[in-house]
Length: 404
Image 1: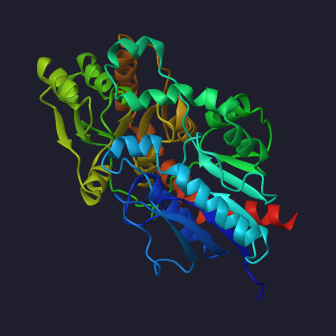
Image 2 (image 1 turned 90 degrees about the horizontal axis):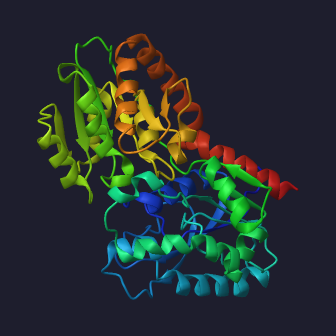
């Protein structure tokens, strides 16, 4: 029996009880632990669930959360003020244990944070390391800026990402010195090339996956087409444009279920009220089983987000064979292909709702296409987004690099 290769994983957040990038890092590590002997360097965040010692067959090295803003969830999520101390503690552990040769290490990989504004603790230590999947960096579309409204002050730090990438020493060295990088979508590869002067060894793998693929018994023969929106409700997700598209639709032929909450929810509800769109129902935030129920019972997912870095809900919907309409931008634009859905070009707030309506009507008049999308979605998701298949691709990539 071959001895497993030794992999040190850096993930300040990794837990099966959490959501977002913390949960995703856990899923990647869970599958990789079947192939590698893993040592996880992580952080016990004050306001988050933590990975338990017996959750996975791995060794866990924990560091203390020394952040000063633990009560501010959104600020913590974006700025991660605790990362400076984590970087120092993690780097010191690598120097004291791996560089000295006391701990065996064939490779180091950092999963999160996913944003491209955080240096890797392994930089400059003569260790083989990789980073990712990383995402973010999408810009707002100028024609929508007047409707974006006010945003929290800390979100404006995104505007400095290009500057940090070009001039922050450790960050620049981290990306230029990595043996390879995982990009969550093709647009990320472009940003990395521009921001860090790096033009090779970038592999595109979306960070999201699913545990199962669930065929739904939908026949698309109802007089009314049941539309679904799932996602956070902020202006850039395009829900307001989807609601406005109902001005150009026959109201008797469509219903829309909206699942999610956020800063733009009240505006969206008011938009529906002002136009008497009684066939649009807002559910707010629902639990996992309830969301899955709507994935199964709906006919078409419409997710017109025009600044979507990855698109986890797109993959979730695909796992239920749900046909989709998305924007040809960011993560969704790279997830959906012509065999499983329609992709829209984003124009401006006056034209975009018309384009959404046109796409909906085209699929309503061609139900056979919806049946094809359903079948193709299931097979495509099985091949590309089931966790064992997806992370298995990455494991093979790692083994190949270690073998070199």
